Image (cartoon, rainbow, N blue to C red; front, side, top):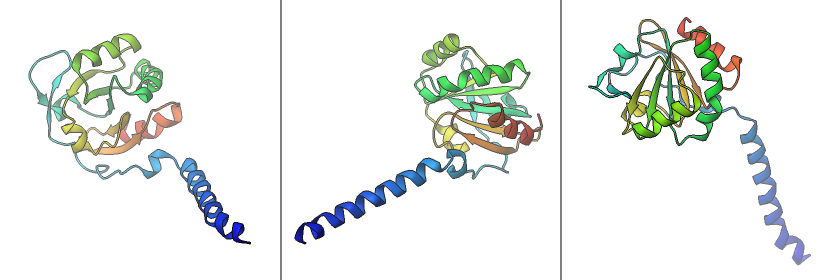
Length: 173
């Protein structure tokens, strides 16, 4: 009987771990990701182009409707997302790339290796634009309408047409 009482707390703990792990695996990232910027104007921040040059206001660079995609060369899910972004480019969808917390040389090499789906690319070396947008991790994609208002957010890699359809509809594309 003493063994039973000694093993009971461990068994209960193991059951709780399994229940919480199973519950968290069922939840979609986009459902639990903060969307505080949805419905608000795009942040007023200036970023330099990846190709070099002076910083320009992001609102001028990202004239909507447009998708704004935060990516990084060090991001494994960004590699998975690359074919879907290239397919969107082939359909004529305008996408602004934001190289998030990345060395510009690494970002350029990343695009050279996987293809460049972006209309233009800007550099967010210190992550300030990411903070302003509310980025929780890369990749993240925002739908911005013609008025410069963020209409939707997708956290994680866009892997299917359905992932992009919602964003495109929200941005008016």
